[in-house]
Image (cartoon, rainbow over the protein chains, first blue to last red):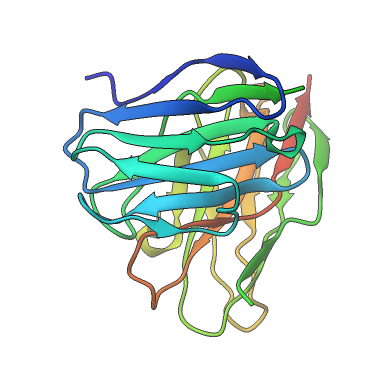
Length: 112
Length: 111
């Protein structure tokens, strides 16, 4: 099992460009999450999907959209990238609330 | 407001010394609390959770509701413990599995 996979690993964008970060899990988990990691701020939840077909905002949703494509896949879209979105993005999943979350390897995004 | 605070950005100790990574939380209900660890070039992974009351890799953490703390302790640090440690809280009332992370503490164990 690959666990949680994320693509791409690295990305450089110019301000105003758009892109989609992909996340997939092969553990048959119900819930999936997108976090961003910034120095001195820990991980902050952007959006989450408690189950297939549902998505909800987290702590820092502005500038992002998500799609829970199916049970396996949960994508994060930046419609118009801004330098403030330079960060490392982590996808995670778990079987149910309060269970251990399993994390992907991360995507390092730089917006110039 | 729900918040997790890890007051130390960096904790540096010598091998064999005791370690305590501090975590304080702000939450009015009954939270679920976790410690996650990120070793160099590895994924973030669960170290332990308070509900399990277990010791992992020699680490323990006790939930102190009176002091709203969940400090991580190990009596004798090893070099392989060097990593970034995150304390995290899952609000008990939300049932969504959301995690609120602290800022993280880098533990550096010197030989």
